[in-house]
Image 1 (tube, rainbow, N blue to C red):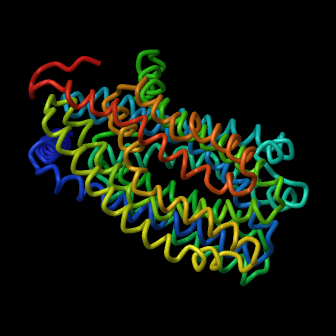
Image 2: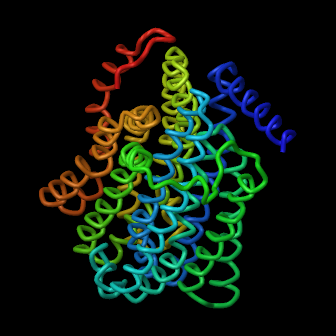
Length: 461
């Protein structure tokens, strides 16, 4: 027992030194690169679903876009508990309060499982109304119903996996998170090939492959906690009903719930608006969303590498490191997005064709993808602003910026532009929304960065 206690103290000191002394640029890259790999693999298996399902038919392709809204709901609660716990954990480790950090980890983990089960039960009871609400047409509905069944069964694994992944990242152990997510992603890709192509299970095969891979990923993510490789613990003895802890988790995590929840609502509005133009439009918009998410996931990975650095530094009152972390991430993210934007614009038609070789789908998808690629360079502005405020527990501002990009601007743009310009307006809505959101975010970021105090002083929330 004494040996284990000494080892935990030693590990804690080493972790503190790593997070407080390692040059910011190197620390963000070391934390961000595993997350980038995880994001790439996750998006590759999402695209693999789209690719294999696309071989079934246009309506089946549309179903992946419909169920994406359901996955966003599950992820909304998973990320709420994950980011809510992670930010609190990192700041408490920065202040060297390990016991409270463990309370946040265990409480968020078990709450995420309960919410995953609740969403699963409700979704299974109201399947058809839910699919229609998410934008399904009558021809897409049979495929969406089958695919959604397996996603709902995977619900508890998805929500708890989000929590464990984020806690690992906020502790500065992104490598373990990468192993769990990439293993699940690779299994999903092989599962798609086996079940859809090899066993002719159709869209049910895509859903089953996703369900199995999510539970395997959940088990792998638990291993570092069970083996004592983390300062956080997933133990019932640390699960607390203290209102203060639950309130802090929900308050800090609420921007993630808002972001993912509004993403689901925006996807629903987008699908319903596209449905006016038939299944080809729904399929095209769905394919473009997957491609754009894939291109953007590199920037997300960098931002997620930035978050634990900012949270820890803020908790340790090292505000100069907060500034360095943010500016380094912004520069790197914008340069990478500019390069990928040019690549996506020049190859838009070929990229859409990979997923569905239908002339109408290709025509709609190419125009929408090219427009989104033009705005890709602006995406890090709003996202990193949201991540910065959330990592330091400034939840009101983080929530506003999350809502701005995910719905407050996007939903009105979808409705207004599609009403004024028809299908062309719908194709441009996401790009216009991204531009407006970025311009609105900049003043809040400038004001906050200027008001950060000198190192060692107390910051005002």
